[in-house]
Image 1 (tube, rainbow, N blue to C red):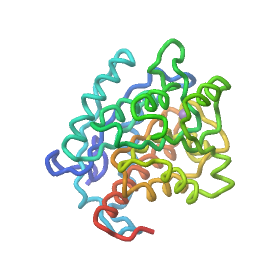
Image 2: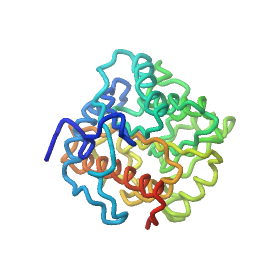
Image 3: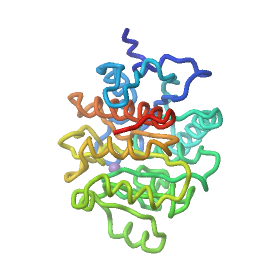
Length: 293
Ligand SMILES: [Mn+2]
């Protein structure tokens, strides 16, 4: 039965839940075209498209306990959003559950990482068309153009790998020569193949746990054009599916940001919803010792 107010199959109570969905309808730092504040509800709505049974793992999402916390309140400044998201996500980790957060612009990701209790134990795969490595943008250090930089400040440069990047300023490249965050460009992934690229990225992260921050613009605008700053020559949906599958044994959190429903005919939202469901089944399969293809 459809319950459009929540993510599909996310009808477990908090106490039983292994996964917790959270929406952050904040897009005040969007620099080009707005609308990501409507992302969480559009992703939820499109999640009802799917069968609950997963062909590859043999798992049924209706049997995997998932809770939907709903959306956080509207926010004022980006700093107030950061404080609110940290406070909302910390109890999810503390309870041993995995957060799956829907944005919102990419400014909503750093507080999800900052809420993790042991930053030295956390590696971050940061999937994005953009480097997001400015120290400040338009006067706001919490802008979505600064998000990988804020995450590096929390977990350390060696514990972050950006994947899919193909848009960067000279200033960001110069800054990063001092700081040393690793990145794998979309062009390198196209040349080397996704599986070896992901393996290389995962090998760089020496931490036990891995968090994936997915800016939907990492994926090519042909597949996910409903986003604030679309950038050609991106990853395929299947590439990102592979990232999730390969990271699943270490995955402790996921966010999907920058889906902008005013530009969507449904394909971007449905892809975001499907990738969230992929994470749920892959992480569950890894925990249960299933073979995953
Ligand atoms: Mn981006």
